[in-house]
Image 1 (tube, helix red, strand yellow):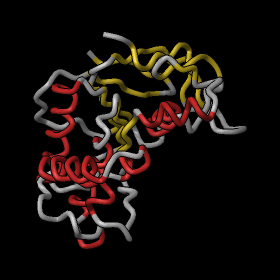
Image 2 (image 1 turned 180 degrees about the vertical axis):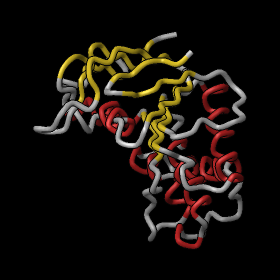
Image 3 (image 1 turned 90 degrees about the vertical axis):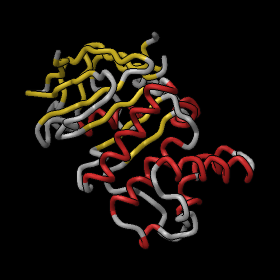
Length: 223
């Protein structure tokens, strides 16, 4: 198993602000399913931003996919992001595009053929229990259905890693279960590394996982 995220004495802060995470050291391996918990404002989303390259380390080091996030160049960052799937709490769907178009957006950007796009959209929408809704628009769907589209989009390019920020925070139980099942399968079968920020780890989880907690600016693993 190879490390995909390695932090050594990592300190994160916004410009001219106080430290949000201080001297954190941890590693996440290929195929790990990781939950990150902590109180509101503890730095969970800040940590995800640093992994995604939206916030550079203040001190210490952070390597993602072998790349030093303190000294990463724009082409390297763009390449890294093509191997990441991102799931946002507020969906971030394009309301003027159909469900199918939203799902295949990463494939469009990467230049995949229409045939591959359509095949992948059908497969993923089947997995998220939205078959037959390819031509609908996001605002015609419930919140839970929109988030399931967001998860399908994150998985559309079979990424090496998925970062998810409170992916089931506002969802009904059915949609939450569909999303957890899909992420479990991606981790278990495709060895996708999954990092999830959440207030609450689901009661029923069917594969082994790791649990990191952020508290008083420190990150530690709960065993």
